[in-house]
Length: 257
Length: 308
Image 1 (tube, rainbow over the protein chains, first blue to last red):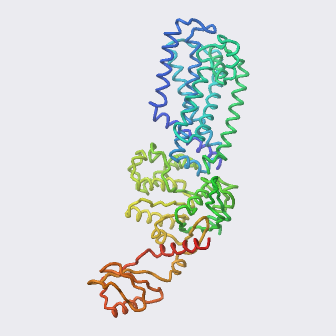
Image 2: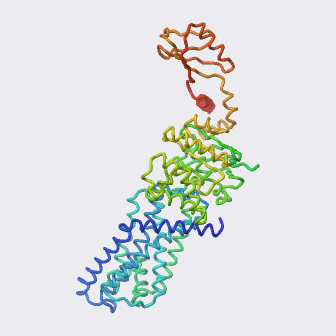
Image 3: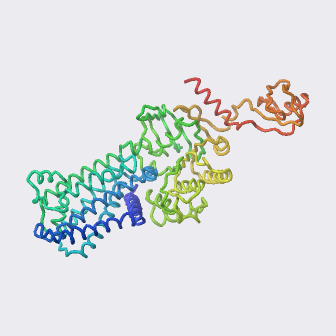
């Protein structure tokens, strides 16, 4: 295929993915908006007002970056895992496998679809948070870079889950039993300064801690971890996940026997 | 001239150890209408899936219009349009989106993709349904949708894996006409089917695959000429005796008003009727007991089974 043909094929997947999550917006866009609004009301306004400051900011200002990132992570992941597994389940993944598209175009098409949903939900949640607090952006470029990179990484992770999933139950196992606990324990609602040395050390093994804190640094200018180190880690994880996804597309017997 | 499809030494062993293809060779000429027949599990769908890159081969070479599916997969895939056996489209997408997206996957520019989508949805009688979700279609319409989708990038080789399975007779006939029409326009067609009448009616060449081997690969006319004997069923006026006897023939009573007769193809029907008259039988009608190709097919498979 020529470069132009590859570009057209890529745009076709992206358009299809975006139309898919926009078509079912009641399942994809509305639930995170409602859930995060409840978080803002309960943790931010009701409980947060009694907690006082954290990291030099009001509690709601402290939790907003983590909640936005939580929405980006879960939605980027959910978009790719449900879309790609759905295509596998109904066998219309064959439409793509028989076409002359390269594997990288297929993968990037799904990644951009996941990133589009992750960022759109992130934007919706951010706009909703403005009803509860003021946000001042400390470093726009760090904020954009970390949210984009995180979204790409979790889209890739969703793709890996989709390739290995044998049922719709398998699609929800990772978000429920891995992503949610890691996010909750990743410093969304607290600073690890509040923990004992042992648990603070344990928390540093959680990749979500670096993602949440790097994003919080972009908005508030405070972080429990070194931001450069956080970027390096996310970049390494993303590169490794990308290479593995390409390997799966080329070799996995779950796609081509 | 370059073959539309050339297969050499194709083998496929699945992870569970099942050897689906045991080294098949196959050639399909450009413009041909080729039937690939075989019983369930013979290796037809595996062969097709390997050609279309849905299954990985264990060994062997496959070339489509001279392009290797291993070395130049993108170029080879551009030549192929696949109509699979099972429905494989999103039930929630509209017909327009399904066909239009497929054009996009092949890199067709927007305007051309939309023109082609309109052209093939109209040709397959689906234009009025273009905004409907695919799940709303009848079985026959779903089959036609898959044909429209396979044709939207205008492939030179169209592969149809049992395209008329579960389709009513009227629709099947109209699909035959459509396939004849596109074959006449130069598209090479490979068809697998369980309806042997379909293969006999449409195809010029035939390959029979059984237990991973090609047991026959020849011209349809040549194959049918090999049929030495045919069985006819005769209906008679009045009641037949328990023991039907026709001099020089093997006759078997079917019921009180009909019997079957095995007739050598070298014998003229005039001779047959003379003998029937001598036997005092008043024939009111006659018909072929089985499809001619079906008889050959069963015979070839039985022969293949004996030798393995």
